[in-house]
Amino acid sequence: MPLNFNVGVLGHIDSGKTSLARALSTTASTAAFDKNPQSRERGITLDLGFSSFAVPVPQHLGASGCHTLQFTLVDCPGHASLIRTIIGGAQIIDLMMLVIDVTKGMQTQSAECLVIGEIACQKMVVVLNKTDLLAEGKRQATIEKMTKKMQRTLENTKFCGSPIISVAAKPGGPEAPETCAAQGISELIELLKSQTYLPTRDPSGPFLMAVDHCFSIKGQGTVMTGTILSGSVSLGDNVEIPALKVTRKVKTMQMFHKPVSSAMQGDRLGLCVTQFDPKLLERGLVCTPESLSTIHAAVISVKKIPYFRGSLHTKAKFHITVGHETVMGKVMFFGPSPDNFDKEPQENCFDFEKEYLYQEEYLCSDSKSSEDKENKQMGERQIPKQQWALLEFEKPVTCPKPCLVIGSKLDTDIHANTCRLAFHGLLMEGLEDKNYTETFLPKLKMYKLKHKEGQVERISDDYSVIGRSLFKKETNIHIFVGLKVKLSTGEDGIIEGSFGQSGKFKIRIPNGLHPSTKQLLTPSSKKKSKGKGDSTASVAREDDGKVDSEPVLISLCFKRYVFDPQKKMIQS
Image (cartoon, rainbow, N blue to C red; front, side):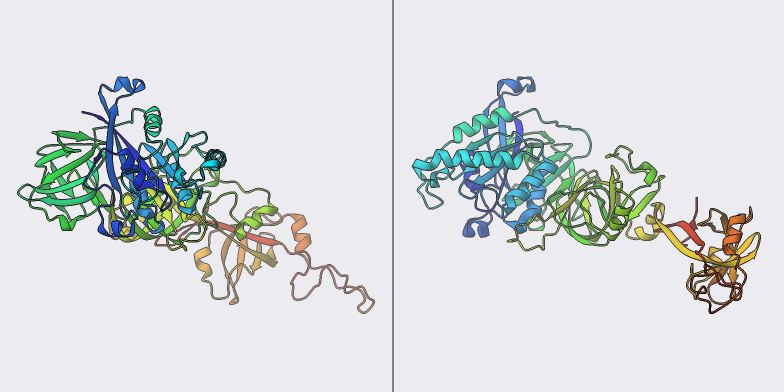
C-alpha cells in the first residue's frame, strides 16, 4: 500500500492551479480537473478536484514501511463565492501549495487561502506560476522581486520561511498546444518530496469520509469518491449517508483504480454500494451508522481572524461553515468570569459547572466599543485567554465532533479588497435537541453583570434611609427586596421595600450610619439672613428634610443569568 500525502492546491481565481495539478499528475481521479461541465465551459474550477502522482518514498520517510509515496492533489476553487468549498477541502490536507500568479502577486483570495491555511494546515509551499509571461530579459529579476515580496507577506504568519519556487505550468496559456512542456515541474516535485512528513493517521474511532463525487457504474452499483477524514473502513462494513438517513453495505473499494479491502484516515477512496441513486448525493459525508449528530446550535471555542476588519458583535449573523456544510447563523460571545481571565485555554472540553460572562462582542485589543471607551479611563481592559461563542443555526447541520468551524461574511462584495473570514473555532458541544432553548440553554451559566445607581434622599433613622432614582416609577420594587446595596460613604445596606408611590424605597443599614454620613445627610439650620448674597453659596438647604449637599450614592450590583427562565437576580 502506498503512503498517501494530501496536498491542497489553493490560490486566487485564474492563478493556474488546475493547470499545475494537471502538469503534476499522472493519475486523475473521477473528480479531477473540473469534471463539472460548467467549469470546463468557463475555464474555472467550481469544485474540489482530486488527482495524484506517485514517487519512491524519500529517505527521510524510510520508517513508514511503504515503498511508494502517493501525492493526492486537492485542487481547490479560487473563485470568491466558492470559499465554503475551500474550507471543506482545507480540513483534509497535509501540506498546502499556495499558487500565485507571478505577474499579479497576492490577491484577495490568495490572502483568504493563506488565512485558511493558517487555521487548518501546518506546512506550506509557495508556487509562483506563469513565469513564461515575463519578458525573458527581466524574468529572473521579476521572480526575485516577487520572492522577496512573498517572504515579507509570510513574515507575520506561521508560514514564515516557507520555500518559494517558480514554475510555468501551462506555457502559452490555456490555448497553447499540449506539446508545450511545463517548466520547473521536476524541481517542484523534488521540493514537495523534501517537505513531506509522516502524517498522523489514526484508524480508530468512527469512520468518516468527505464525499466529493458520486456516480453509477452499470451492473456494479453506485461509487462515492472522497477522502477519509477519520477512522477506517473495510469491505462488508455498513456505512450511513447521514443527510439522507440511509445505510448501505460496502460492496467493493478502490484507491486510484486499484482494488483494496480496507482504507484509513487520509486515504483517497472510491467506495461502491448497491441500490443507491447517485443523484441524491453530489457532495456530503458518509460515516459509521449513527456516529454523526445533526445539531441546531453549538458551543465553540472562538478566535477572531486578525485580518477581518471591524468588530464581532453578539447577535450578528454570519455564514458558518461547520465540517462540510455552510449555513447562516447567529452568534453570542462569552468569556470566563473575570477571576479566570488568565486560565490556560481548554481546547478539548467545555465545563458546564463553571460560570461565564456574557459579552456584547468578541474582546480583542482593537475592539472599539463604548464599553471600551469607559475602560480607557480605568486603564487597559483585560482580555481573557479564551473566549467562546454560542452559535444558533438557521437550519440544522450534520457534523462530527470536534470539528473546525469558520464564520465568514460571504455576502461582502467579492471585488472589495477585504478578508471575509471573521472567526474560527472548534466545536465543543453540539445541541441536538430542537427545543434546546428550553432543555439545554438553562444549563449554560452565562450571566450579565448589572449595575444600578441611585441616591439617598434622606435619613429615616440611625439604621435606615430613603432612596430614589434607582428604579423607574413603574418598577415592581418587591422583586428587589432583600438585595444588598452599598452607599458611596461605605455603609452596606439591604433593600426593605418601596416607600410611597413614586419609585422611592427604604434601605436598612444593619450596622447603623457613620456619624460623618449622618452629618452629610442632616440639613443645616436655616441661614440667618436671606438676601445677603450668601444663599447661593450655601452647601445645604433645609426643605422638608430633603438634602441638596454632595449626594450620597446607592450602588446595586447583581448577576442575571441570560438563560434563566425566572430571570432571578443573584448576588455573591
